[in-house]
Image (cartoon, rainbow over all chains, first blue to last red; front, side, top):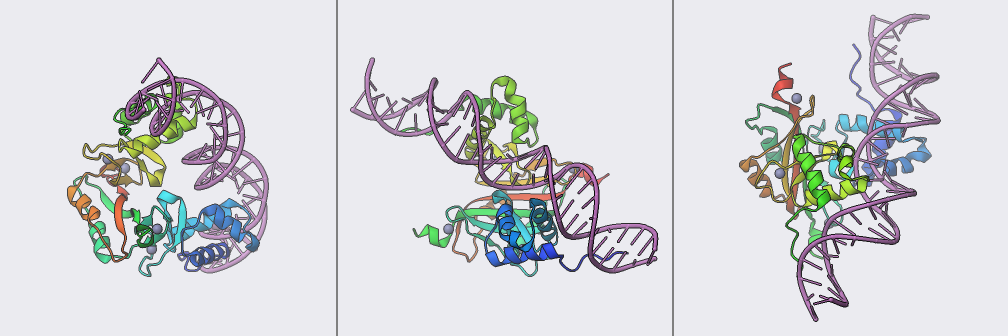
Length: 133
Length: 133
DNA sequence: AACGCATTGTTATATTATAACATTATTATT
DNA sequence: AATAATAATGTTATAATATAACAATGCGTT
Ligand SMILES: [Zn+2]
Ligand SMILES: [Zn+2]
Ligand SMILES: [Zn+2]
Ligand SMILES: [Zn+2]
């Protein structure tokens, strides 16, 4: 039996490190450009690292923006229940950590007969700063 | 004062008509291919029609799939509160019409000081059919 | 050593979406 | 009817996002 990976590979570390330092969502090609000095030369190297990091929950994809952000919830071991707030003016993105909301959505059922194992929620609006402009 | 548009243009009608008949999300380039016989020759013609149709709520974009689906909720006049269920096996997508859910999310507030004017929620799982395979 | 599997490296290509500019259509105002 | 404002169209080119395909390497297990 091969164990599940419990460490990060070289490229995965490089990409995660860069995304964590950003504190905001980054585009894949912006990541690529910035890690080229560390040896990652091709889009696929970045996308493969991102795929794995998303899979294990270290990084989330902001679908409406095609951008990637580091997870801020220590309890977010896998990316199966994510919620974000997005400012439509300055594009600031924050991961929402609200246990009521996550409970509500994780337990959500409708009459479709479908069992949901995952969700992604994106709220849009104006952040505090932009609202007061 | 110019009034808000209350009809659809030629290209908008063609695109909406095609998407409504599909009953499932369509990719922009698949739409393009299929409406070429009706005179829309370039991607921009399709994207512009889609943009407008999304804006007025006739069509929603499934962000995680980069696909477009016709609105099934008569009360969905604008695309500011959308929820979908997506089968990860057969890719069937259904627009969720659940007033409790939409109330809960429309009234959601957290301590970020942000006022949310819009949301998009995507649930993932296995549909009835795929679950029983 | 031999195997299985994840990761890497590399080149090419597919897919999704927009920029820029000229033109035409529609509606509102004078 | 002329003018102006707004929206839609047509067209070419290009930008931005993402994956296919294949060969090679690294690493833990047997
Ligand atoms: Zn998270
Ligand atoms: Zn803002
Ligand atoms: Zn709708
Ligand atoms: Zn299914």
